[in-house]
Image (cartoon, rainbow, N blue to C red; front, side):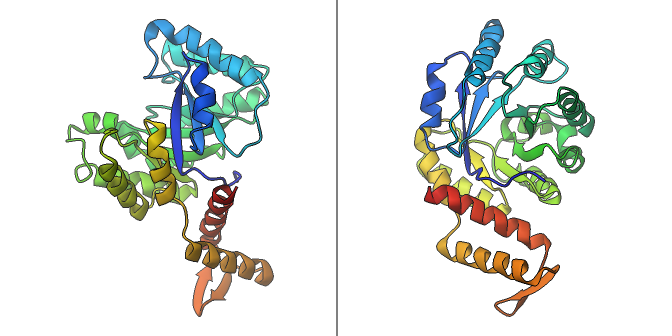
Length: 283
């Protein structure tokens, strides 16, 4: 089982601009993703890949920020080159974000390749195609390397032939949350694309949190404080999580009673996630 950590927010850092990586790390986001896919023009793919390898050739600070790389689509020439570069790297990135995953076999292929190379690299999977949505539950459980599913709403809306909006995508969002919960992993919502509409960002982030998402992407650092606020646990939630974790530690069973309520063991993982996020907030 993966180590639980805070994944309230993420931001992309273009692989074409090395100066942006440090700025992204200072943005307050829990995840910084070096972008090799959609945000990089075809003519710049080789440069972005080389820059990515250069970033991770340097020692990274132990600052609680998750570093990850979004590779190109597996099966494409660029995606295959990205994967080969990671497998051959002396200092590979600690995690890969896989876009447009359609089935669990794609995840298992990458996991097997990482196993063969003796790498500990983790995986996050974007669900943004209709076949991927259909197979989301199996994709989430395809490998114990998978830490999170991400909801790719823009591409998925095009694939579903629906309007890009909350209501038309509610079923799809719920299905991705269901899949992630079944695997006990994080689930991160699509970024809010209107940088000038902070009220809209807040409204959608709050709705996502209520639906079960554990975080949301951003397109600019100024969105991150709102996202982090909404996906951070309250003082009451933290106190309750501590009670539940302590009760299980003391009882050493699959059932405990907390505040006169029966709590089963699967709840423990959720409580541990709350405390992991709380630790990140306090640091």
